[in-house]
Length: 319
Image (cartoon, rainbow, N blue to C red; front, side):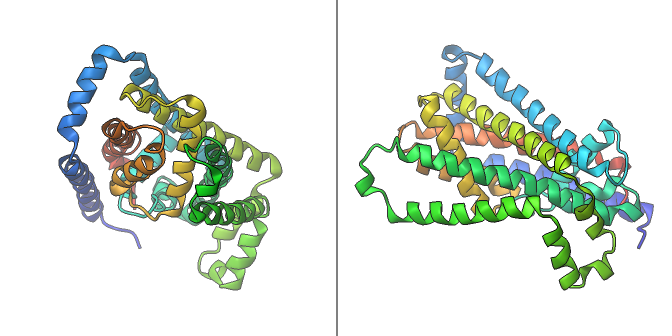
């Protein structure tokens, strides 16, 4: 069903106002905002500002990699310019801010495609997200293993829940790797639930990728993952969280792994990541305010700012 121009404009306006409203609400709700700003001012004088510049550059590189990866897959069904792919990724984030783990991006990005290509585009967007999930699981598992070696107490006192998390992570990691390398399993499931009859273009995406495409998607996901991880570590150091990189990076990898299990909407991501980060890094540092500030700025750079930018890029999108 094609929506009228007036209805489409109204929907875009509502989404934009919601995005601005929720981000403003998040700023107001951040209990430590005043202290974090004071800490930022203090660190501005003592910490190398190049760390903050590097963190901002990491945001640009992070989205460049994401846009490149998504465009690589979407071009299998419809050729998109880098400019249009950028519009899709940023505006898609704006529209998906209220969905758990930003899963709505799988559907919201395809509005830049022609109507007859959108169903297939959803399939490619799903593959794009699956590639990142594989990397988060695999490296998160490695990070958790490395972190256990640095715990400030003996292995005998390690909480039993840790082993359950590791065991579940191993099973999920194996499953995701097998699923990604055998996308025809998804096709069989789509056929089994008869979804291919309602959305005939959906299964096309899972048939067209060769091994080179899959490895390239995994490679770009890996580059994005470590860009984001290093960005987080630089912010932690900037805000005075003094942890060595051999502890900091495995901690961050573990945090991303745990976040992967939690169905968190984008607007609440900063608070949840801050709590999980405190749980993990609190074992090695007592700089609680610095940890919360770094988590909040990471959210601002990678969710809030791109989502606000995306709201201005929605005008040429047709639902």
